[in-house]
Amino acid sequence: MNQVSTPGILFIINPNAGGRKTKRLLNKLEEFKSKIDVRFTEYPKHAKEIVKSEFDNYETFVAVGGDGTVNEIASGLIGSKKKLAIYPGGSGNGFAREFGFGKSVKRLINSIEKGKTLQADVIRLNGKPCFHFAGVGYDSAVAYDFSKRKGRKFWNYVVSTLNVILKYKPVKATVKINHGEIQGSFFMINMANNRQFGYHAIIAPKANPTDGKFDLVLVSPFPIYMFPIFSLKLFTGWLKPSKRIRYISTSSVMIETNEKLFHIDGEPKKIKSPVKIEIDGSKLNVADTGRVRF
Image 1: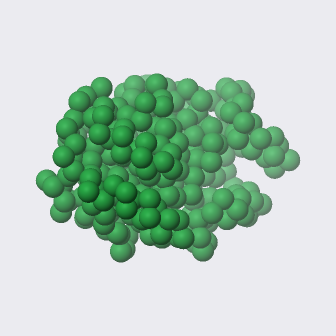
Image 2: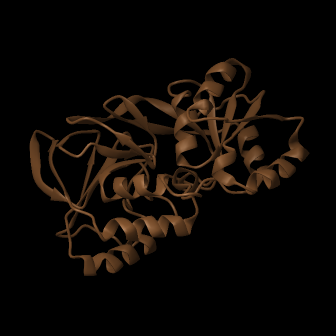
């Protein structure tokens, strides 16, 4: 852990992620207006621009939004002494949940002012930074479907999940790792820096975002009638290695596939094969909430 001084805190708010919740948050922030400043994003990638322009003026940047907003802000902090903190305001909020961030503004600011940080790993996919989860296959198809829906609520996620599973076809890929390779068809391939996608859907129970590795999760195709069982185990944390689910802890992997649609931290991205995935040697300082021990 590092000790970092905190002369300034900037909340960067994605108003589209939280909807009506944004107004309630602003009311909560009134109590702390002498300690913080607030900026609103106005278009995609604006959060990263705000970090760049305000980098020298603040020590802590608070992402208010989902994993996509977190990715934008964190991308501008990699390898620096600046801190990332999160007020979860998106849909799944997977990264925020794993690092113990909640909806108490008072607790959040107290954690920031204590100055303790956790150093999170950074994954890169052909150079693109990822802090939480990346994948290709079923979850990337769901991410794409979800991105087209109005509103990013849990039930829209459920609708996307069901819509995709009814027409989904497995991804053919060659996974090169540890001087060997695994070829085949996959329901999905995940690179997990944390345990859960979001909504407490735990796909990689042993993933640790601070250990210098990620968990490669290879899920083989299965009959559609088994999907409810898979989903139940996912949301109850009971997924384990089996003949259909393989876990490999690693710091690098190469994926060759004709499928271009990946997702990075829940946001659909088109990435051309081959895709080199590796842990970046630099770190991301995340405010220590005191609620997790990796």
